[in-house]
Length: 329
Image (cartoon, rainbow, N blue to C red):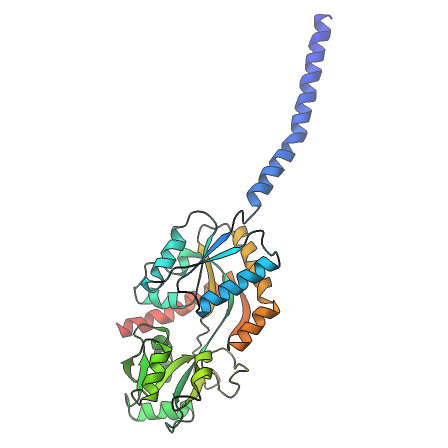
């Protein structure tokens, strides 16, 4: 073979190889991109800052079950209960996770903890994935108290400031929701310490408190026992079927709501596309009949709020809570 022919053959082979590589390159790149985009690549760890059995824990587990049964994600949600420190331990664990597969499921108690200076992080430390429904409380009095409406209670407190005793846990949701209403309506109560719903019920039943905040489900379970309770206001955005005769604060002219949503959060560095994948799975799961039934039976409000709206709502509420915290401390 002549040198000229050998040279031409080498050039032809080189060009053929280059062409083959150029065709293969997009396939390799595409395969790599697909591998990088596939998420989740393993089970998603969901940190719940409470012991098993409470609403936040149960909702996370029910949604995880639906997501797994319907194949909404290629890997399951694994619930990890991490109570203690008023949520600080769980929140910090979620923020410190660097596996790209850890999220936090909490509610607006985090905002109170931030406002009170009990935790060193707030909403801006996270990527807000969204709200999966929530549950609003009622303010209730003893059934034989003589106070039939919120107006009766407010009028009494305006005529005689501090004349009624409110059972609360210092720095708790009952404390802050009551304080938001007091600020809006212009009254003041005396306070007595009662950390749990059961403690608050005992206080009212025993005549040691006049009024207290209860989850709607707590109220429904207790309203006909221990002397009975009457709810004078509901702090949800709208009335609910479980207590249709109890008006909302907004209906009564007070711009106070407390939805206490089930809030899904991820570390701030979670890629937006990954957050969107989880958000879509949660949104779809919320539509499942089993989820709707649980929420209805437990006087909860079933809805989906996208992450950006959830973030904006939470940040606005945090500013109000900081004002209340400054007055409390």
